Image 1: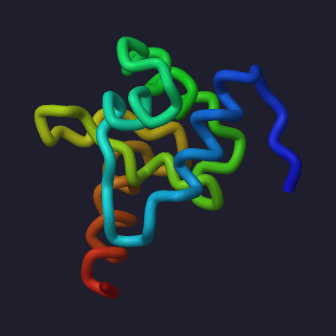
Image 2: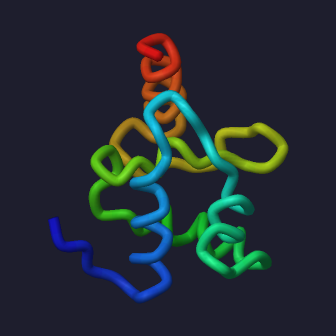
Length: 91
């Protein structure tokens, strides 16, 4: 699958693909991992623009305070919660 977006978005989405099923990272952790430690909000925005919300697992990215944040995929935040619960149960 060829991802189309800005260079920043593609960096974010490629990093999301590295998060193992059943695990989460924070927006801040993703920002740090891609070399933009102060860009947590921009990471959240890139997640919101993700054209493949389950294949590119933006549901595995949460807020630093443990909150779920948003989810642009069908079903919104409740779907994000279910995806995370299902992955944790399979682990």
